[in-house]
Length: 535
Ligand code: HXC
Image (cartoon, rainbow, N blue to C red; front, side, top):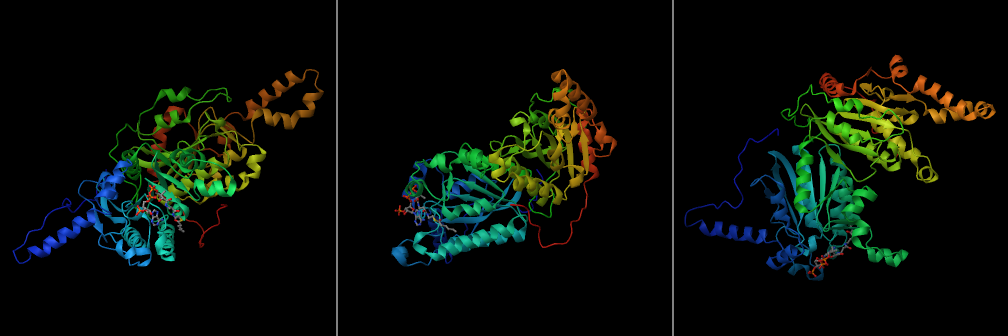
């Protein structure tokens, strides 16, 4: 891990010592510190533990390098006096904020403290989170938010809405400047969900974390539908059905592990490159199993993750949104120690077809990579867009266009490998030369054509087949003729649409060489305020 460690940090709780005269001052401060560390008090901490949850500070300790957390604004209290709030003041006011190191790299952190008024978010918490976000942007370090609370603090009325509004605004400004990660370790309800939703990655812990706009009771009263909290907005729901979450964690410890691992692939900000790890794998490693991994019968499925695992540094592939739209695969990996984004179709699921959810998944991931200087390596094998009324009415046109937009505007190095089907629109959108891929390679099994052989023959020769004395034989003959002509990468290579045709085992060294060439790539887009991606 690349380290930016320059200053050794003293562990927490180091006691100061002084002469007799000053001792009372130090003791008074120590007492205040102890009070701060107790949050909402021992009974609340015990209740939190009884629910199988850690406190905010315990969570931070679990996440960061030992002894590196520096709390800021720990003495802040709210100034509300309504509803008896003057008797309900706790140091820190339900949010622990500060900075620390993870794998020796700097991060800013905020964590809801459920022991204080249920982790509800008021004006003071708003000021604290704003400050830590501003610090993160100025210092150019990732922000990690640990959520566990009742949302806007009801007693503070509009002031708590202001607090959320300020957070949302900063989440938006920080987007594309520093990576933002949200970890859901408790309830996250109502408008409060929009802070995590504005960040780059959401990790939800199973059983304890949930997110929803309106809870089961409201839904029942408005629509009559009965649903439990877990089904409505638990980790698995968001990691598989809604696509809101990127990772479902087993528990709190797993959520922290995922967060640390994720950060290891990312730069600290948009002006940096991700850390390059000492290479753990031979750049010239050629895996002969790749040569026969793609079945020659183009309707036989295979597992694209096998391709990815074998091409990138062994053990480095870290899948994102694994449970959502599994017909597309996105994630991070390393090539000769360099962190890259990987995008692929999964022929083992719905033949790797592109649907609405896959479009959103791919487009968002490509944009993240582009924002943070991560090269995009695409493995493409898709028969096209998913046909159907539901897809058309759901706006597959608009959603599919996002992929085109994301690849086109991405100026990071882009390398595409077509392993088999490159039909029509799917071929163009998946990082083709026309969208300014720097290199497009094809495997010998690639079929690059306007459409598949069966469909093409039906359209071109429907009448001829019908009139033939033996329609079935005629059809087979015409399909074979079409396949002979188009079901290969040579026509595309002859026209320069692909740069080279690789024996599959050559893919790893060829990608590494191409990435090395593109290390200092500079590409410019036309000057504009911002584009208008079809949302
Ligand atoms: C003030 C709150 C609170 C809130 C909880 N508490 N939520 N105090 N404002 N929003 C307090 C409770 O009164 C209680 O105090 C303590 O926190 C613990 O809460 P419990 O309900 O005992 O805990 P639990 O059973 O674990 O339930 C947790 C919960 C539930 C699911 C979060 O408290 C809940 O549903 N809270 C309300 C959620 C909500 O509707 N929030 C507003 C959403 S709208 P005592 O002292 O009695 O123990 C919103 C708008 C944001 O957030 C808009 C942004 C644009």
